[in-house]
Length: 168
Image 1 (cartoon, rainbow, N blue to C red):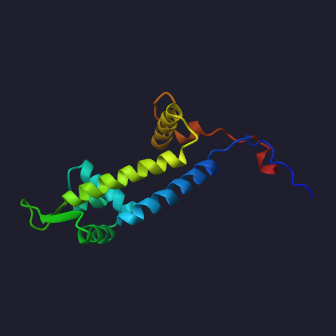
Image 2: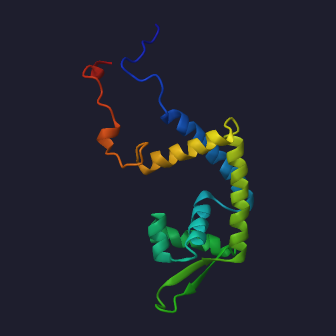
Image 3: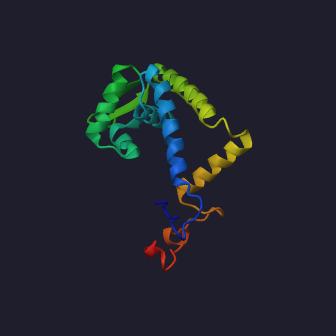
């Protein structure tokens, strides 16, 4: 018995394609990060520490949206590899300041070059202008903004389904 098409559905959906692309990107990224001794969560922490020129452990926990105990474990990994150092805050001895070491800066740079090659491989079907457009569209979608740059309410972004959609 042949299956019937779903009625009143748009012919194209982005979710499955974004998921497929995300999986390819993640698998390739993990394969180039592993030889560097890094996992994606390490990379995020190193990037935040570089961009913020260091951080307290508490602020890092908030920025990474991670439980403090998990941040301590993450920092233990990075410290054991000599990529970060934790120093007592001179203002408050109970607080630790976390910063990249020179080795951390170098490892992060190597990871970013490797990830640029991954992106080139995964997005090889797009030219430079198309990649720029994709990046801009993804930024808009991630920020929850419409094409005019204004914040859009969720309800305004989603069309109401037809009244008979429940019968599909």
